[in-house]
Image (cartoon, rainbow, N blue to C red; front, side):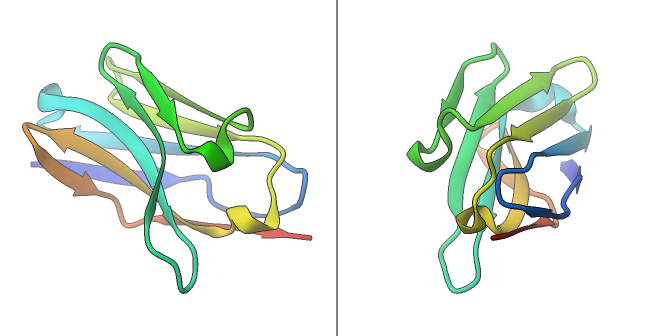
Length: 115
């Protein structure tokens, strides 16, 4: 079992920045990759960014060049640096971890970007 706890969500104005953090606990040694999903009101949950244990990253097209994901294998944490935020980035952001093919999801943290 893996538990995830997000932090860092807030309300910001367009063009601003936020840094989301996620701390994993439990069987963290089994985590293969971690990432961030988001779900806006009335929309499906979508993958924002992901990072493997070896440091390989991927980003959704909508956030490329603005968001940066980083991870710390020792502390079992993952962060998402979000710059140049847009109103369409408004969503609940969820931390995700994959452990032996099982997906775990945190409770989410709300990001609101006002124009």
